[in-house]
Amino acid sequence: MRRTKSRMMRMEKREVGIVHEFLSLTLEKMVEVEKISHFRKWVGIDLNVRDLFLDHPGMFYLSTKGKRHTVFLREAYERGCLIEAGRKLLDLALLGCCGLGRGDDKSNSVDQSEENEVEEMYND
Image 1 (cartoon, rainbow, N blue to C red):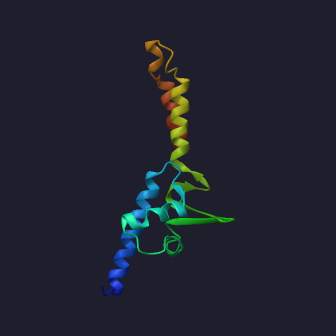
Image 2: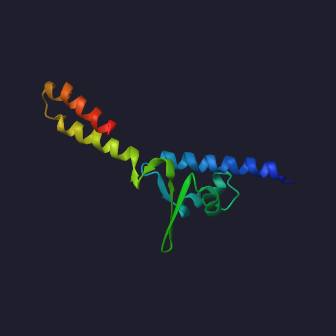
Image 3: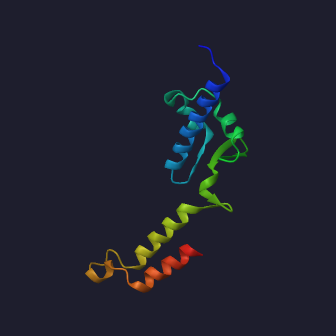
């Protein structure tokens, strides 16, 4: 099969999209490169995955600590912190503060002051 430059670019774009979606489905928005390599053949990725990450530094960050290589989805992090997880953790903490599981019906409702506090935290 003859591979032209435009065909190779389309194939690389497809493979970047696949890896991006895979990372966006994970909770931490990061995974070891070795684990992604296990799925290469199954999803039809022909390129070297490590090279794929290095070619797209604006989308992926490749960390190499010792022999472990980990790839991060850049858009999910801000100043080194995972954006979504912090908000989800805050939501879970507030649900716990509201008294879920106490057995009384009043504990399941969130009053207006708690809703305002959550909105202020998100806006900061």
